[in-house]
Image (cartoon, rainbow, N blue to C red; front, side, top):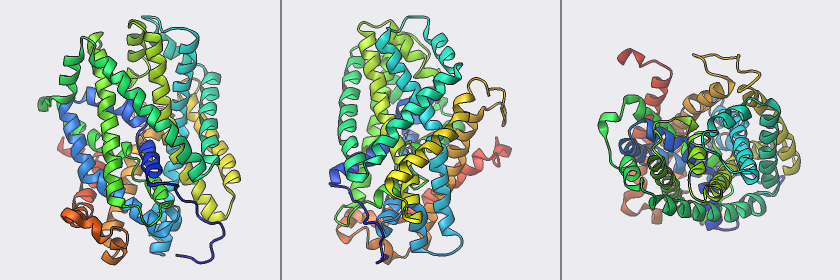
Length: 453
Ligand code: TRP
């Protein structure tokens, strides 16, 4: 706690607004794009079960830890660790978080741009069967279009963050998230009336453990973590705008529930139509941009449904992108005393520039590959989601589990919140279960365990 605050810290206007904003951060491309295709790849229902276990054993505990660290210090990730333990090491975890936010946002906006482009082109002409693959490829092949749409997406993100916490981020989440959920439910109901509904539901919800590989388990752990926006201080930053009356544990449960709910509903929307039109559910990353447009092309009212679908995905992506930008913006505002306007415009622009190599990695720079053929976009994505986030999450768990005192933690999770021994269960998870699970993910991805394969 400092007494000489230069700028008064902003706060959420309501608890509801905070929960929506954090849910908006969590629900994003991870739910709409990554979760369904990974579930498709790794055996449907069995993958979903492991994903649920990961949300409970590592997701919710780290979410609570980030809220505790953020709210108790009312600071950005670097300032927060420094305020709690000012030594050489812990503030570095905050630095890693800010850097990770920078990296993820740079390529996240590129995919955000693809979605805007899809909305735009489906407004002007309907999807036609047999053309989606070619269309996507010719779009990827155009450097100027890729950079243009990437920039437009970043422009929207900058615009919302410019408004600040309650009158920018919270206000827009209160509009976009309910609209998102309503559109999602409408499309799901529509899918559930299609002939492939039963197959789709069975595929997603009936566990077939024979299809679940070790890689599938690790993907489920990683996806759960990414989907909840954990490991880099995004939730910590949102928590730093909380006041003392909000119940952290209840909010964390609500956010985790809504995020998981949206991932499963997205699956229930996608798989029935995938089976109705007989496309292979194990299609991979092209599901959103190739398979589904194909399906929309052959559906009655496909143009309308297709546009609705991409608008929905755009809402999900933008509410996540603003949380990533807010981490970086709050960091320079707190640490260097910049105004929100300067921080937002300048950093937004710099991150836009940093994203250009990712946009070009699908065309003129596609020859630049490393790590077994990965282009720049894929390298940044694996670097961030397979290494930087689990490392950040691991240290956040160690910090909350082993470094903070009970007194410091109990000041945030109040006695009233300890119904059903909530605090004690959380404490066991964050001390033992979460760090071990994250360490396994890390060791596996760094290849240290390849020896056991
Ligand atoms: N959770 C978002 C998604 O599912 C992505 C995201 C936003 C994120 N902020 C983050 C991921 C912070 C990790 C850390 O698409």
